[in-house]
Image (cartoon, rainbow, N blue to C red; front, side, top):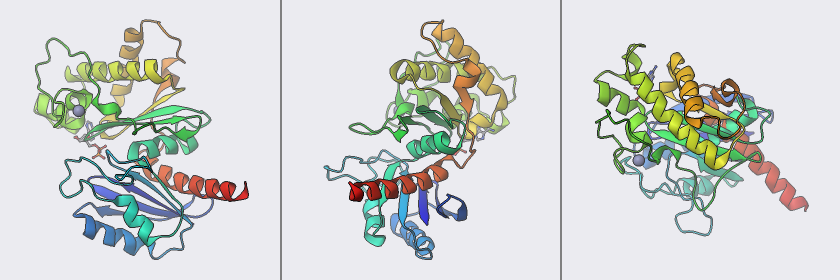
Length: 293
Ligand code: ADP
Ligand code: ZN
């Protein structure tokens, strides 16, 4: 039996699944202080004989096993969670193989194995919600280097008429600061959900996202880019992004037809948790293979 935790700043989604990855039970726990949250997570998983666990966490997180901050949540604006040893807590409680990565890397893994990017060997998953974050799968494995990708915080070229200062607490007008859900609301005075379809902000929004997708394409050349998150519930936005992307790229590098290249998530609101279950499965398989060789 596999366990999966999508650890977010608002909620922890915990799930258990059988060996075919069919979800048996799934719960959502509000993210409060670490100890209260862990106790609820333990109470859930203690009920099941899990053989492996996958965790996709909000970040940034420590991912280098040789470093002291491995398994920790690093500098987060979420009060009480900076330097919390999330992986360590779970390791102490459950003596099983545990896969550990970011929430968006887990979502990218979910999308490539079971969602919109199925059949591909590489993909980027980008969520546009309260923040903007991206995960990467390369050669069918989540990509991590010295750290994990932080694709929401790149700088983009501002529209000359856009005077909005930006909401990112670290960089102000990075992509997240200019184009995440809270920026939409702050710039227009209307919550994203309630913004009319013909509001000029959508062209600006599409342009900023298309610029970022161009950068990702030029840097990583994935086979497909999957977009998710609350803001992508705006059905008209996808087409605008695709159009702007095509214009900005100006035919420079070859990409698949844009309707197949920039697509919406296939597992709405579930890519992350399904990804963590898949990571648990992979972790167990890797461990078995290691002990055989
Ligand atoms: P989170 O990122 O916290 O996991 P969501 O992905 O649901 O959660 O993102 C929430 C953000 O997305 C909020 O800023 C909200 O205003 C915005 N949002 C949610 N639904 C829509 C929508 N239909 N249109 C535009 N913005 C939306
Ligand atoms: Zn930023």
